Length: 178
Image 1: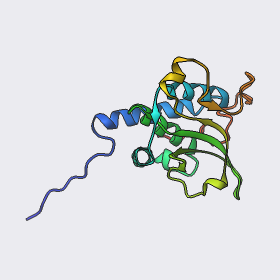
Image 2 (image 1 turned 180 degrees about the vertical axis):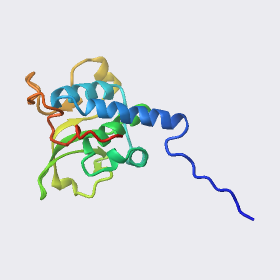
Image 3 (image 1 turned 90 degrees about the vertical axis):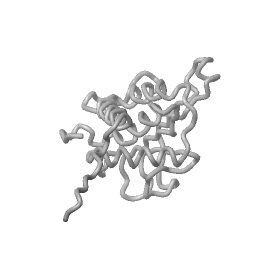
């Protein structure tokens, strides 16, 4: 006698649709110039409450399980954007960071922080140097206008890109499927 066993489909259900939508949007947003991406993410973060480490880690694990490309070594930009967007769908926002690794191998990198800790990273926080950070904004700050939840490059109107892709050097235009 055999017992029929089936594995649940990853990304199934209403939460899975939201997750796949966030991943698809992340691949589109990852192609934006750095300054524009920062402004779009700052708009998304407006009015959200800060995400906890546990919430962010749970969403990160779901994104990595759903998208092989986000799970890859070169998927840090779309992965971090997808996690931030999926968290925002729950009303929270982790600190989204883009910068460089300050320890070998020196390379561009995007990551998330929550409660002052990096989420899902093997690198120590001291090994990562953020150049752009988008944080959650309190409702009072959002109502008052201004861009107090963002800092980084691209504030002079020049996005610092030659128009050839994301400008971060993360390899987001590699032609792989999500």
